[in-house]
Image 1 (cartoon, protein in one colour):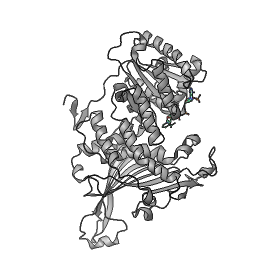
Image 2 (cartoon, helix red, strand yellow):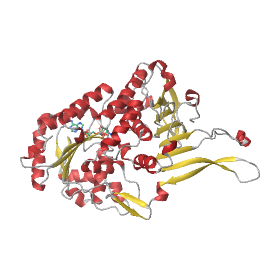
Image 3 (cartoon, helix red, strand yellow):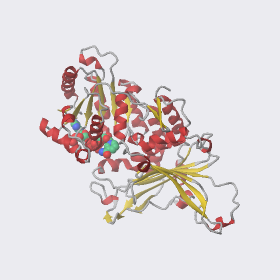
Image 4 (cartoon, helix red, strand yellow):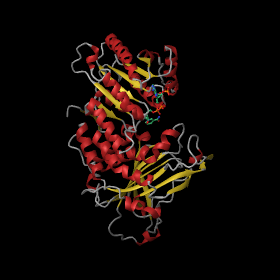
Length: 509
Ligand SMILES: NC(=O)c1ccc[n+]([C@@H]2O[C@H](COP(=O)([O-])OP(=O)(O)OC[C@H]3O[C@@H](n4cnc5c(N)ncnc54)[C@H](OP(=O)(O)O)[C@@H]3O)[C@@H](O)[C@H]2O)c1
């Protein structure tokens, strides 16, 4: 165990190594995601000394920017970070950034991109490239094709010897629109790059709390023996957002909550909760086990759709004291839109560990609060000897809650005797929260994911077969909605969605 060090009971497993010198090329650098997440994440890595000092970052966009304007743009993306106490000035970071104007949908512009990158690579003696596609998903295929056609997919275009160098591509979500488009995209990308060059992002996998699911399950030996159908009654995975659709109306109305959240974030968390321990922590060992979970999900039964799916759209309501309008009154949304902003799916994983255990994937917009959590409800004790339990309002089941965001932490609900002469039971919580236990703040998911892509570690990225297995399950769900096999319900913004208790026969409220 060369990578392990021990200090006061903490075990540190060194996984990161120094990144190699690399040119990071961001397609879509002027977009919302680059501004909000990618540029700040790169800056944080830079200030922490985690980027190789020769690293260069090239933004590709179609806007006209002088060097000065681009610096202002980068600075505007870093305002929050540099204004925070201890925030560093951005000068040195600006020096490693540059901008190249190009329309990435025009293949004729790629020879120019190539010449630009070639000069930069020669100047800093760099052979490695990371292309980050932070662009509209409709452009992924086209950009990959043009990267290849212009020779950028292999370091040969540098005309120097680049033994051992890499070219990698990071692809944003959504990866595909349904099973056939995801397959077509996989086919295209895999015809140019090998699987180990492709980093398909689901940023949930970069969240500290989501990564902790594997540590929690496979390092703390007390949970694994009860982590199965014998002891677990049901599992809920909730992803609630209080926001509406912001400036992403066109994207969201075409997508809906099932594509936007459940197909990727919820199913990825499900696979971590339900997977078998992997043979090692090697990327493929972990991804093989996650894949088996996705492949074991019982196919959605469209004939009994109402039993397994509920979908709804928000109407006007109140959140945080403010009145918000109905979804079909939002800017750029048609008044007759039938896009679901809330969905709850009940599914089963048909394998030995999980036979008969319902998993509920619940996601919604305009919920009362922003919250992502996994709730594992255990079966009650087989026989109750305390009569006083009949006075209890809630079921006597232990509940483990993994809080992914906000207030990240884990809590276990147990029952205790309320002090006094009566035998009265009361649920109490054993809590672990990150903020109370660790001084350092949690790193942003994008910091971890970009670092991993630079290091060539694909564990936290989705493999082609995982993506297809997830779409295989979800596509019939979407077809059922499209064909109106279930009624689209309504819920007031600021409420936790439509009534689910009767629907699932379980107290989910
Ligand atoms: N935003 C998020 O919170 C978020 C979260 C998760 C995943 N994602 C994914 O991340 C990707 C980017 O999202 P986004 O929200 O940043 O989208 P966006 O704001 O629409 O940004 C797309 C970028 O692509 C540029 N662009 C479009 N067509 C171009 C062309 N022909 N040539 C050059 N540049 C062009 C746009 O340039 P202009 O500025 O000139 O229009 C813009 O900079 C998408 O795949 C999205 O699904 C986004």
